[in-house]
Image (cartoon, rainbow over all chains, first blue to last red; front, side):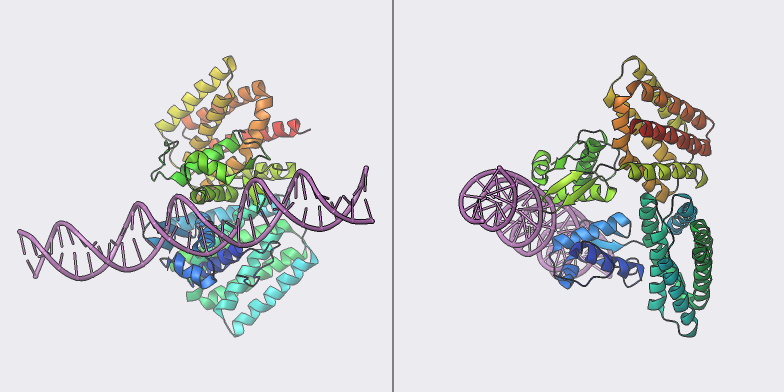
Amino acid sequence: MSLIQLENHDDINDVDVIQEIIRNRICFLEYPAGTTLKETALAEEFGVSRTPLREALNRLRYLGLIETRNGVGTVVVGLSYLQITQIYEMRMELAQLIGKLSPNKITDEHEEIALSLLTRAQRQTIEFDIQEYFAINHQLHHLIYDIIGNASLKEMWKQLYFQSASSWYQVAKNTTEKVCHSLIDEITDLVTAIKSRDAEAVGISQRLHIKYGFERIKLFNQ
Amino acid sequence: MSLIQLENHDDINDVDVIQEIIRNRICFLEYPAGTTLKETALAEEFGVSRTPLREALNRLRYLGLIETRNGVGTVVVGLSYLQITQIYEMRMELAQLIGKLSPNKITDEHEEIALSLLTRAQRQTIEFDIQEYFAINHQLHHLIYDIIGNASLKEMWKQLYFQSASSWYQVAKNTTEKVCHSLIDEITDLVTAIKSRDAEAVGISQRLHIKYGFERIKLFNQ
DNA sequence: AATCTATAAGCTGTATACAGATACAGAGTC
DNA sequence: GACTCTGTATCTGTATACAGCTTATAGATT
């Protein structure tokens, strides 16, 4: 098998690619919570045997996105309200650490990406496309991720993003107009912080908008 | 295979047990950094095939304790000084969150365990035994872990403990007398915090002693 | 008609054989 | 003597067959 490269990896690896594809399907609600994933079917789809596919699933299980029960199957986890609360509390705390723990230098490239994301977000107010909305959010996450300097913080930041992604996108799907403007506000703040090369401001701004996102989830769950 | 239960698990599972045994061997320096782990040999030792053993190794790889290179082998990772620094910076920040993010109620049982650990630590000044020192530290970690209420914080706290364990125990092995008294100080502070049922104090105390531990590592690495 | 049971279908978990990758040693060459 | 090439041993990666677990369903029994 030789799948197409999705993101920038140095060692392109079938298992990594498969894991990433399935992960995105979960995050972007193609596999909503409760969906049963069958190893045989997925292995056939990707043209590999069950062995490497199981390894991809193992990683997703470790990420906390799926759960497997012997004899039954592998299902996409649906987070309880308590779990979502805890994840968001944690994300708000981690956001503040971005600027505190020796962040990477913010570069012109970061600024360019942020500006292009802002343009794309503004275009969404004219013609909304949920897939494009997901993609902008996803790349926004990668941008922040790239600014984080502490390797441990990076990993945890990433993990919590993936864990909360599907819950957030579930809300976003149902309140498109509002979240669209929220996204513009978030990226606008981010551009300001990046233009002044201020990683601490990036973190504080992230904390703020994670909080707003959580408020929206709370509203949605009432 | 039917291995003996090591810690309290609900679903006892061969892969879990094997993972835990190998993990402890790495943390307790039985497999120091650079050691090559051979799948065939380990599978034979535990009386299972390579398949479940590989899954155990996979989990240790996600934990960041080992690295695998195709055709070469699986080696125990040795952290660079920068990596250790980042892990300790992160641990100090997470420690403060223990009391902040809805901790579990501290119970009489916690107090009893803390007191028994203190007794055991004090006994170490009379007759030092490195294995017992490791065990006390390990159970101390479990005690803190049990007080953390936020599930995400718990997982991250655990992961960073395992990642830094071998580096710390390497230092401890070479400065037994000093670390022995440090341990008593740490548990004494912990007992005080637990007696007043103050999770925030537990976290602050942890932050302090993680900092001291890091200072000792810095001294050792000069 | 209701209930209990046996059985079969479908899933994950495990063992094993084979393929691919890498390091090292030794023959061959300059 | 130094260098290069190649064969081989040994490791991880993958495919596949089989074992074990769970659930649903059909059929017998009350």
